[in-house]
Image (cartoon, rainbow, N blue to C red):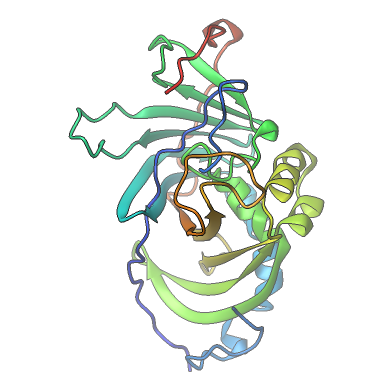
Length: 296
């Protein structure tokens, strides 16, 4: 019997951890067993081998070509809960996406910052309206392979295709049952993503990013929940990244969170409107800021 589930809200939200350019003191923040689920969902209801389905999830998105994307990065630390949200479109063929990312309001009550525009591309993150002394009409470019987490969380949003490619390293996958995401019935899977295995199986243009993440995290697996529709398209993916002592698991420096207190960062991506127009254009070299970035 298929267990019908409804999504529950999970606590925990993220702090500000948008990347600063290289040399500006980067702030990189920032189970299951195969077979039947505890709820009784039968293996033959899973739509096939759950592990194989997830390992091909990124390929399914490339076949879908484009989609509308929403992102959320949440963290709870020191009694403070904050959320960074993003929305935009993604071209899975070109591996290029554009998101408008909204930082949470400052606890001091200061005027909220205008959304930051982020361009996601193979090996690069571009940010506009970055602040820190960067002119409003200029972009900041970050080489994501230089970030200790490969930009899985540093930019405030996980690249949707990279999130799917983490599933190439899926293991210990459990089929949970069916639920709905944005009104669409989907199959819910839960498991661990092996970062090293994902890096080995990823397309060449994304291996450097995932290899950076392998080096940057002390644990080589990341818990995930994935939701796939009847056409094999990923509709939602949530990863749980863990940090300790204000550092990434690999020891990269970041804002302190209190000694011995682990911090869970929930990165969630929703995808819909497959085939939507996604004509994002990467910045021209002359539009990229080459000056000094203010710190603080």
